[in-house]
Length: 146
Image (cartoon, rainbow, N blue to C red; front, side, top):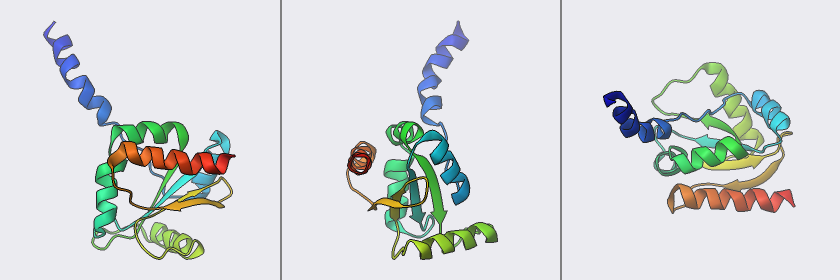
């Protein structure tokens, strides 16, 4: 009996702690996007130094409403350009190639691309939290679906 009460108390926190899968390999992301018929959200970020990137991560990407939307509608890819954190050299080199290919000028830059890598939409930080950001992404995706 006590165990079931404990589980009922912690279950909401366990479900919110669900980890979102952010890929780092573009070819893998395109393959999954094609298989699942989903666009790719490419998050060009400076995760440990860019204030707007840190806000976007905390206010949106960590929130359950975004995670739920993303799981059903997006393939997520993080292209990080950290200052202090060390990335694998191959990942950093691949990120640099993609940043150059897509002409990334600042962070955060969010690209929505199709399974071939063609840009459908470009955005960045939006105020209003996760629910507002999900609405924003839906508009961008719906606009390109028609």
